[in-house]
Image (cartoon, rainbow, N blue to C red; front, top):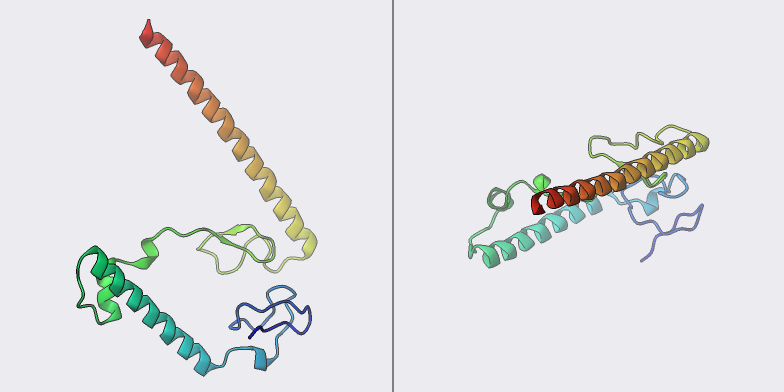
Length: 152
C-alpha cells in the first residue's frame, strides 16, 4: 500500500516522521505508524539482523550456536565501526556529518540562505577538486624527475 502526502501528493517513504519529507506538511495521524506498529517493525528488524548474522557466522567461521543478539554483536564487533556512505540532507542535498542531528547548512534558515550555503559549498568543492588535480600533476612531475635522475 502506498501512502501519499495530502498536500503535495508525493509518496511517503518514512511513516515515523510527523511531517512530509518534501513539503513539510504535518501529516494526519492515520498516515503515521502507531506505537504498536513501531514496536512490531523494530522486532522484525532485529530478528532479520540476527538471522543474517547467524548465516554470516556459520558461513565465515563455522559457528552455528548463536541464539542471542548480544552474542552476535560480541562475535561480529560493533556495527558502528563499519564505514557508511555520508548522509545527505533532504532539503539542500549537502553531506551531513554523523555528529549533527539536523543539517547545519539549512536547519532553521530560509530558502535564500540555504541556496547561498549550497553555492558556497559547491564552490569550495570545486576549489578542492582543482587543487587535487594540481597535486596529482605535481606528484607525477616529481616522480618523472626522480626517475630521470636515477636513470642517469
